[in-house]
Image (tube, rainbow, N blue to C red):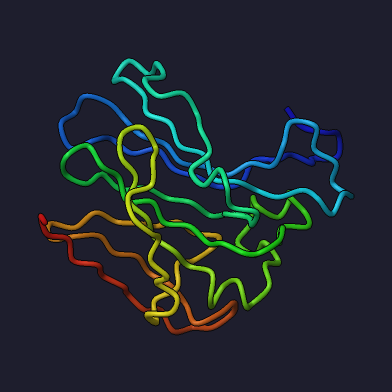
Amino acid sequence: WGKNGGYQGVTQGAIKGDLWSTGFAAVWSYGMENYDPYSPDNIDKMYFATLSKEGEFVVKPKRVFPNDAGTQIGGNIAALASGKWLIAYNEAPKDVITNYLKIFFDDWSVPDEVRTSGGRVAIVDGNGDVQGDPVDVAALGAPFPVEISHLVERPDGVGWIYMDGPGLDTVKIAHLRCSRA
């Protein structure tokens, strides 16, 4: 779905295989089916679904944060043990993408405050239910990039790269170590 002139309600997301080669999980953001690009009420929400290895829905798409009034964009996902998933995204109190055509490029015109303070990670179970509270990784000094969702699985956890704002030439690496509780 979408509107003429390139307006659409879908922003970046990801699909990754689980640790047992039995299927996949996906996370993405989108606005609403009756998208009006000029409405101040448009808000991107994060969705989650699991799929079988044949590509059929096991858990149909559902909102990850159904009671959150804000927006969630730039999502990515990584498989964890016990059928759980780590999702990474940026949040803001209101919609921040004013031109959806820009999501095909490397500058979505997202305000700097969202870039530097919006990064979050959360754990969801195989049904897409959030386990515990999301972690504010931006407050830990490792913001999650909005336009490039390069969440990389490592032997002892996950990592990602980020820059200290648009147009800067210093790349940093963030690493979260994971262990069984």
